[in-house]
Image (cartoon, protein in one colour):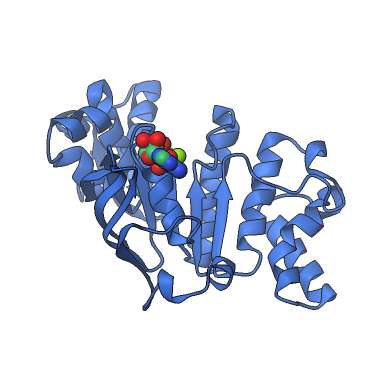
Length: 313
Ligand code: ADP
Ligand code: MG
């Protein structure tokens, strides 16, 4: 768990972060979002004490961060930044093994851990472990950066615009990777981004900041359907509000319980209950149908999705 309690950071009389209270539950992904200069990075960096707050406290599963010496604290917290920060003269293997090495792990254990992490990040261990950062693509470097942050199995992962410099396709792939890793490891993650789609896709809880102040915190659905004010509405909604809602909701949430369509159910055309409404809508349009059978992950009929019900939303 990560909890900010009335946290402020002041520079020369102006607040970079102003009385922030926000909690990321154990094992959840929290997102700090806002325009440039809204205080996201400052808030994040107070968690691993790269910056100390002017007032307020930050709690990490039972302790406050100020109770832990920064070096010890940072070994419990993985940190991924946009510019990766890999050591250029170290191989991939050595980069990933940085913290385990500092912790005095035996060489064989480090080697195994590196192989395991490269596998988790879908990098070919034999092909990349002895390479240097400049020999890798931007996406591969960022994967190595994530692997390095996870190396000593930290309790918490902090990510500051980790995919900001990547092209859209690589970025989407890495977002999927983070969702997968999160599913596998159940780490508590705090992610900073200014990308709305990224926040809605990955966040269990999202905090929208503006000029250092928390404007609203809640689930993606809260922010889209119950914005606290016009600022929130404009930030998340704009012209795309309808599409974004379809993106975060799944077929399971709106299907009708009918398990056959007028007696002529075609299983080949069924969609999984976990499919986003956005994708389901695209499929309906592409196939020229107004209903789709919905099945669970074992292929058992669950219900029927109606175009009319999507349009209502
Ligand atoms: P974000 O990550 O949301 O873009 P930052 O947390 O980096 O925002 O910065 C928030 C505000 O605090 C900005 O106005 C920035 O100029 C100011 N700020 C950040 N770091 C410092 C510093 N070391 N000294 C003075 N002002 C700072
Ligand atoms: Mg920043």
